[in-house]
Structure formats: C-alpha cells, structure tokens
Length: 215
Image 1 (spheres, rainbow, N blue to C red):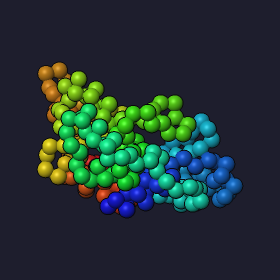
Image 2: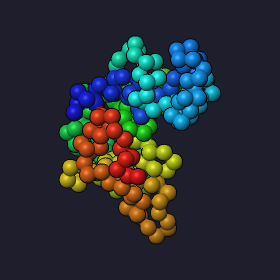
Image 3: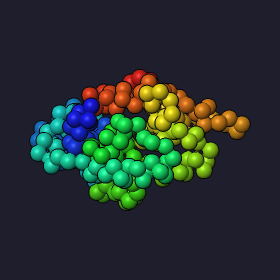
C-alpha cells in the first residue's frame, strides 16, 4: 500500500485526480486537431493557457514523463505526527501515520488532495497555504463537529471527506457541510461512508475513483 501511494504521490502527473497540461504543448506534440479530439476529457481551462485533464490520460502521461519525481510536501517526522495528534486529541490510524511519515505531508490523493498535518505548507503558484488537518479539526470542533471526525480533503462545493478515528477500520465519511438544516446535526449531513480508510486509499492508489462507489 505505501509503495503504491508513493508511486502516485511522487509523480507530478498522477498525484491528484487531474493535472494541468499547456495547450501550446499539446498542439506542438500532437497537432491542433488533438484539442477537438480530447474536448470531452477536458475538465477545465486555465487562464494561464493550460487545460486540466484526468490524470491518466495520454497527454498527461507524456507531458510529465520527464518531470522530477518526489512529494509535493516532504514526509514529516513521527514527532511532528505526535504533535498533531495532541492537537487533534486522538491517535491517528497506523496507516495515516505511515502515510505522513513515509509518503508525504499531504498534497496528494483524491479530489483536492489530502490535507497536511502541519501548518505553513504552500504549493508552488498558490497564494494560500495548504489545508492543515489539525487546524481544520480545531475549527470544526468549535463549530460542533464530532471530535472523532478528522478532515481529509475537500470534495468539491460543500462536500468534504473525513475519516472516523473511533469506528472499526476507520471508515471514510463523505460529508455535506450544507446538507442539514436548523435542528439537525452534522450526522444528518453524511452522504456516504466507505468501509475503511485502507479501501478508500487503495482505490485511489490503484488508479480508481473514490466517487465511483458514491454515484
């Protein structure tokens, strides 16, 4: 599992579900007609002359073939993990501990990519720091979220992925932050639960889509 996660997390073209490729490079490499051919595969168009494509498309594979491998944010020490656990108030699952100490300090994975465990990480070209799971957890507690839910990553719009730190096998919860009304609680915002953290991570590491089970 760790080796599979490293393989994706350390590949700039695969570390997220989508990757940016310059339009000019596509035209130079394949010809202008290629843009029409891949039109349905384009997730979005950037103002910087890039298109966002699904990570495992031929264009992404070719563009990032010679890119330097390595984590976006280097792994942290066990001491750093323990400091984060102190802030969170619970010990992390062993798989998460290994992920943060052997793979990377977040910055890879499904959807927006896993949150870091420490504050102050910023990806190249970004104007804001990467989300920190411990900081998000502290904020969530102040807003009445269950203390056993740990934020993993944003899922788009008002959706968030959390891992249960108390349930058996640490299921991963898809939570709609805008999915419940006055008089209800956070549990009313749950939309899906993947059976275990291991299953959720393995789906992604193996090239799958964690949303396939949801939709």
